[in-house]
Image (cartoon, rainbow, N blue to C red; front, side):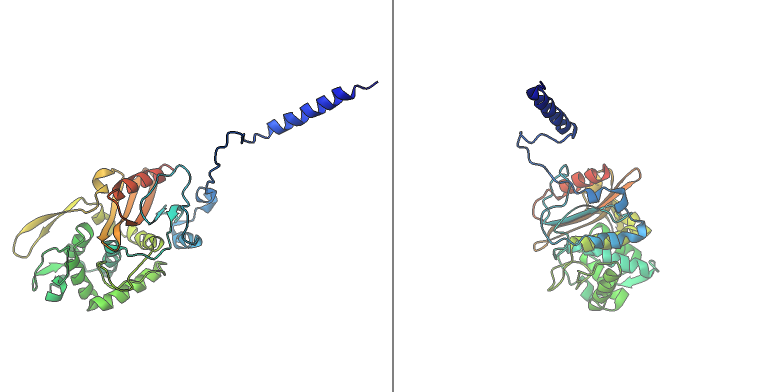
Length: 313
């Protein structure tokens, strides 16, 4: 007579063997499972350099939890985004579409418009209205004459507001007219959620941008050879009209703290908090990061850690 008990035991053992072969992780330890954003690492998500605006455009998730993968370092900024500037791939972000003040980081757009016009050795005569601004000033005086090249270098390295005013007036006739050019150029770069009122980033009613928009603008700036060569400099010797010289130290501390960092612009006002746009490269890898609304002194640590993480992806 057939031994039904033996057959049943043999069948049960076979089922157990199949279940073990599936390789499913054990859940009895109660460890939480962290979801990894696979779309950020898939080779198929890469686009050619010309597709960067489309790539940044494709992710419009509402403000919410960070999209970074589990091993990414923490960031204190209220909004941030980390991208590969060559392809536009978003590596990490949080609240990247939330409108915020961006402080002096918007000077990169001012510089881009000035540099794209050309004739950087043309003279600019300073006026009283140019210098009627606080708090960060180059100290130029009305009726003094400097080149566009000197003034644009000063605003990128030392983030001075009087030179930004002078460049805006020289370029468009007035600060208001220049702001219109800023908004038009921003839209041409895909930054449609931004509105600029002045060339320097001091608080103004209605003025705002987003981390994603500033990444779009910064990518356009990143591709400008003149500006890239300026923002990587640690200092610049400015020659005043009266013969005095002053060594302007770059406000971007990451240039000293992180060897891979090669730019680009800092910003701070009380409403905006600490803001930073930074780039770094290692071998053939490049990353660009925008941080907005940091209320601690750790913005440099965050930028260095996150960009190092991005370069290792």
